[in-house]
Length: 77
Image 1 (cartoon, rainbow, N blue to C red):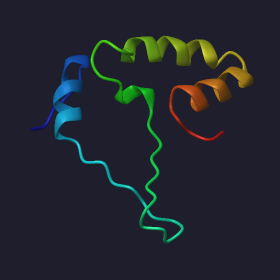
Image 2: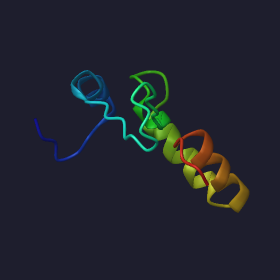
Image 3: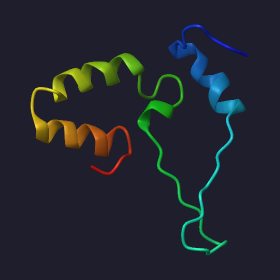
């Protein structure tokens, strides 16, 4: 299945058909770690439009960019 434009209602299909792959850094096969963005939230939990508005607002101050990336994208800043 391919999309020219991915819309909010495609989230359910993507989550159901996605594959989670852990990358092993320390050699311990009993430990799996994942970083998960809020953009993966199921339909109705967190909307992409809301994320876009928050990102646009956060770009006004560097400390808000850090908060957005840490909190909503699940990335280290």
